[in-house]
Image (cartoon, rainbow, N blue to C red; front, side):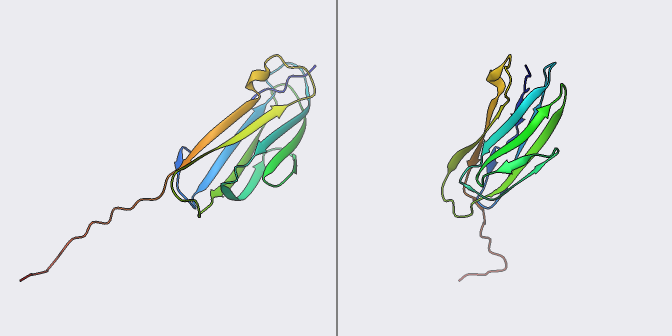
Length: 141
């Protein structure tokens, strides 16, 4: 039976409302047999707008905020990358913490299913500005 390999999710640690966020899912078959029927799922956080994805391989996407990609079969050492991008909703106020979660599965048995899930946490902090006031050329009485 095939082994689906593992994936890693990259993340942005701190961002503000309206700023872009990118998640990179790297998947591969690190086993010695074909991984058949590979499927990747990702639930995009509701705190994101304008969510889009790009893939280095042909994948079939389903859903809108919740994505499922049918990757198909992966030969040993074969890999791919899915990049999910979005923008933090500008209406978020205060501090928010949210996670993006992804999982990969195949139809065959696997030696290490413990590496089939990953998550990345984003902390949204309000934008703060420091605008010092300075007097120039003022002569008070």
